[in-house]
Image (cartoon, rainbow, N blue to C red; front, side, top):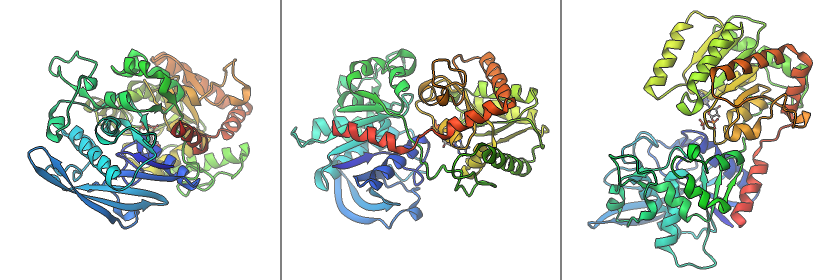
Length: 488
Ligand code: ADP
């Protein structure tokens, strides 16, 4: 079964967020279990070429745009670790893949539509796939292109799977890129939300993908239900309701080798290889002392809270701020690792940083640094994740691997991975964190009070850490679920 992952990100060679980790984790797991998997990516100018095998040309081709403009195209093969790659290079007049970043350009829809056309060309001329796995809106439209324009229907047609990593981003676009590429557009692609008077004729690339994919997955079971509602479907809820027979939530995994506190060189003191509460608590204490020294925080016997996150409206930035203010007022410490791109949120956090500039119980760092992140997970007692919505979320899973207790809002993958410490309906061995439902400052205050009480109850605290140590969020389970979908 030849499986192709069609994606715009792959960690760490072309990474913006969690999508890159998922494409990497899933592909690595499938390859190491003997499956024939390849990842197809644009050959970005900024791709981390030093990390991959020397690219070798597979084939050269020409892609004709309307108006008899030929775009020279080269298909390369390479590999990252053991994952085979196909890299597509296009020498078009717009330098589609030669920009400084993956997303955020005015013509992103055109750039990724061009990429998908070239993927189709690759399938027609170089290799026939058995499974095409598309990730998010930049890849979604290939489902339509493949089914409608390319190949005759036959039992040998591949299964096309589309994974929805975040419904907020849908590839809404004018007709311009379609015209530029000579693709006919139909009412099928019209954006269902026509409320924008400035853009009455928007098209929606994700909608086309959802309409034509054979199977649709999203990254947690709860999110698969949430996106069928108006609040979380962002105008595609009814399209998804119609497709619900084909929609399935598969929880993301995390790479258990990479996120392994027993072998993690970013830590001052590694954890024992099998769980021992006293030794784990001791290791966390030593890491915490190191973190405090490194970031000029005060010695303290009070717990350390943290948040490690993009400071985006999705992540509840006002509630994160309130958690900081409230925890500090209660004598606890807080480490915030994250930065904002939205100017309003950036301003909010600059003001907070200024307010607590001389407070030795608080540190805020805006860098993106995985070594620091690992030290913070290993040092902290609690991580605060008050997301408005969260398709899956990796930070709560990583945190529990480092015996850092999550405080989460009950939404999406957070609801699927964290069972409350007092949940009367849950088996006591499954209780691992603090869960709240509302989206208010009061919810944060109650949750922090509960965390402080847990911290003071040594025996209960050890039980919760022990419960966390039995959780298995490795790719094993998730990859098996994807294989079932591929075989449908
Ligand atoms: P999202 O994909 O929505 O950003 P996830 O919880 O799925 O959120 O994944 C976030 C990932 O990014 C985690 O691996 C987390 O450790 C990492 N991360 C977030 N902010 C930082 C940062 N400032 N430095 C290092 N790693 C970070």
